[in-house]
Picture (tube, helix red, strand yellow):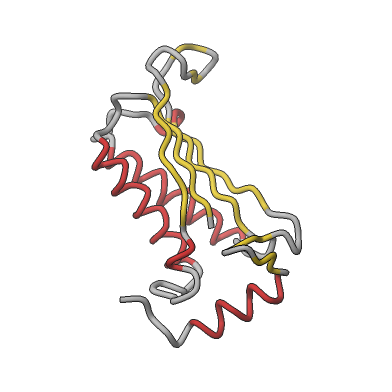
Length: 144
């Protein structure tokens, strides 16, 4: 499950950005009741992209921002409450990481759904059913 965090350069240190990326993954796993899942946990991948100050915008003005975007299978976040909790918890994590120096209006959280059958992990294109089975099978196995 790719996690991409795009943020204005200078908002946080490299180490804080790494911690934030990890925390976003943990929030996702927790809300789906698969924390430590031996299949999913190792497949949370992604990057943090720092954009040069002066090249990020909010309210149609030059401003600091953070965008957190996930790419997930279409069955993910099936309930609105789960979506709401994810957005709230990630927004709070970003605010904490930036020492509350960023207004909520400057933080964007969203998910993009992958096309059914095109969820590729380690060279295999998983269908939603296959992915669900792999996650379920691994639910008994926890990563160290």
